[in-house]
Length: 107
Image 1: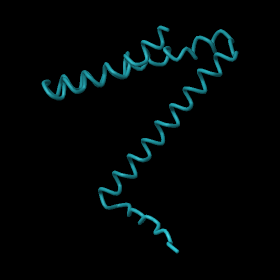
Image 2 (image 1 turned 180 degrees about the vertical axis):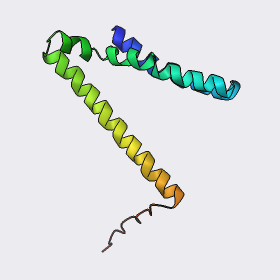
Image 3 (image 1 turned 90 degrees about the vertical axis):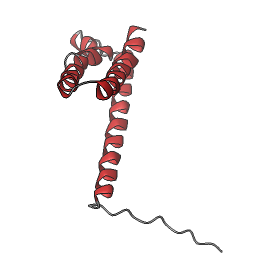
C-alpha cells in the first residue's frame, strides 16, 4: 500500500515542482531542483518497487517476479516512448524522413 501511494508521488512531485520552478524560479533554483529530483528522488523510487530488499533477503518468490515484471514492462514502455521522441525530434530537424503512409488498394 505504501508503495502504491509513494510511486505516484515520486512522479507527481517532480512534475509539479518543475512546472512551478520553470514559471517562477531562477535558473539556479531550476538547477537545484533537477539535482534534488535525481538525489534523493531516485533513491526513493527504487526502493518503492521493493526489489532491492527482496533480492537482498533472497526472497525470489512470486511477488518478487511479479514486481520485476511490472518494472520491466514500465522500462520497456519508457524506452519505446523515448525512442519515438528521438525519432520525432530527428524528423522535426529534417534528419530523418517520414515514410509516407501506405495507400490501400480499392477494388
